[in-house]
Amino acid sequence: MDSNTKLTVQIRSFSYKRGIPYDESGHGGGYVFDCRSILNPGKFERYMMLSGKDREVVDFFLKNTRMEAFIDLAYRMVRMSVETYMERGFTHLMVAFGCTGGQHRSVYCAERLAERIKQDYKVGVDLAHLDLKN
Image (cartoon, rainbow, N blue to C red):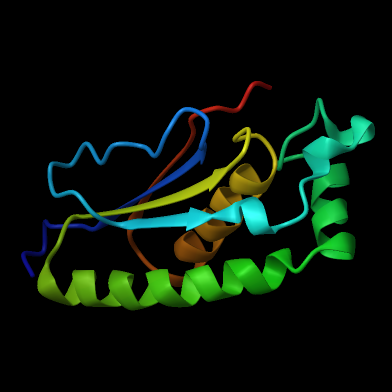
C-alpha cells in the first residue's frame, strides 16, 4: 500500500422512503444494513421529534431492543472488509444504515459504527445523516 493512500469509510444513515444512497466513489458496492427489524422509537410520541443522537432514544434502544447485538454483527462484517481493504490499498468503503424515516434507528447505528471504526482503525471516517431533520 502506498504510504499516502488512506482508506475512508463512508458511513450514511438514510430513509428507505427516499432510497438507498448512491456510492459516489464510482466503485459501487459496500454494505447496506436494514434497521427496520429493530423496534422503532419514532412510533412513540415522546420520541418522535428526537433522533438516534438523543440520550432518550439511546436509552430506549438499550432497554427495549437488541440494537447492540445488531450493531455488533454489522461491525464484525465491516471490520473484516476494513482490514482487507487496508491490506490491499483500497481507498473507499461505503456502509449505509436504513430505516423507515432515517431519524432514529439508522442514525444511532451510523453513529455507533463510526465511533467503533475511529477507535479501532487509523482510517478516515466520513459520517453523514441524509434524512435527519434535527
